[in-house]
Every structure is written in C-alpha cells, then in structure tokens.
Length: 98
Image (cartoon, rainbow, N blue to C red; front, side, top):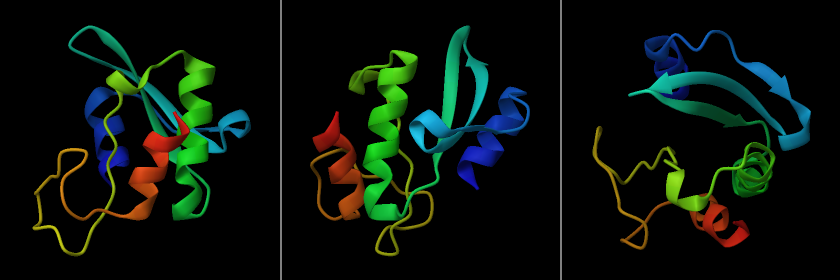
C-alpha cells in the first residue's frame, strides 16, 4: 500500500512487470531526482533477491534505498534505522545481498 500511494503521489503511473528483477516497478521523480518504486513479487523472505537485482539493473547503490516493510511489533507510522532492534528477516537479507 505504501508503494502504491507513493507512486500515486509522484504521478508515476501504473506498475509494470520487470521479470529481470522479479518485481513490479514504477518510475517517478522526487525533488528532481528520478525514483524507482519496486514491489518485489517474491516470497517475503526472498525479497532481498528482487531488490538486489533491481539495484544492479537500474544502477542504484544501497545508500540510495528506502526499504518499506511491515512489522506487527512496530507502532503505526513508526520506523527502525538499519541495525536497530527487531524487523523482519527479509530486511536483513536485502542488505546482505547488496
């Protein structure tokens, strides 16, 4: 839902299939910077594979990523910084694969 809302806010249009990175992608612009919104189409614990493929395909480094995922232990609207307590295993795998 976050990715869909972000795409709508950016006027990115519809998500399209990107089989090379096992994802749906939409392109938009944030503050003049080209932005790619990626929705992995893998099982949750394999989403890191899709993110790693997308970063290679589109030339993005880990420093340019914002990873959004759900966590039932996190307050609505809350956030963790990487390396903080909790989070799902998939988020850790994203970083491990980059």
